[in-house]
Image 1 (spheres, one colour):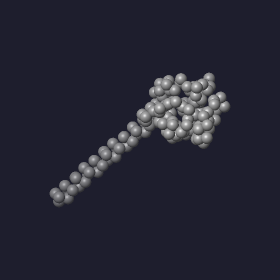
Image 2 (cartoon, one colour):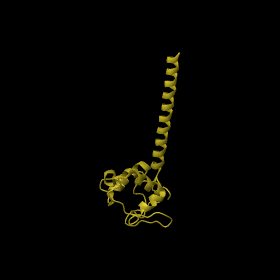
Image 3 (cartoon, helix red, strand yellow):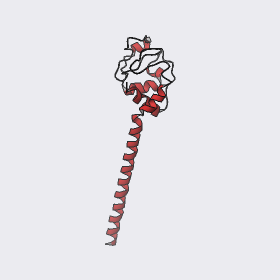
Image 4 (tube, one colour):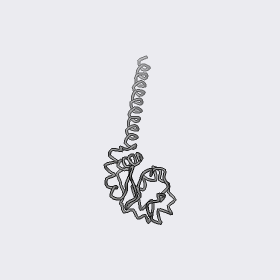
Length: 137
């Protein structure tokens, strides 16, 4: 009888431990998803270095680079007020979040021959923050 009770108690402890592990994993996943969503306020701060070439907002127009209003879901090289590189015109890209993130990380890898003079953003959270900000326009 004692042996049986000991096994049940040990089984109960294992179940409790597994439940704790599951909750911990769910908590980690939720935290990862929250950070992957991006912070538009930090994205606005990060956009300051983009603003020397690009514009967003009600009065945005092309400058040294194209305006970025509605960039998510837009076909590459599709605004009328900017002269795009041949590489960008021929890219056939549509700027979804995955493509934009890859482009922000390494523009010349995604569109070889692009005229964008930018080395890229290596920090994944900064990419997520910048995308979150751009999606507000």
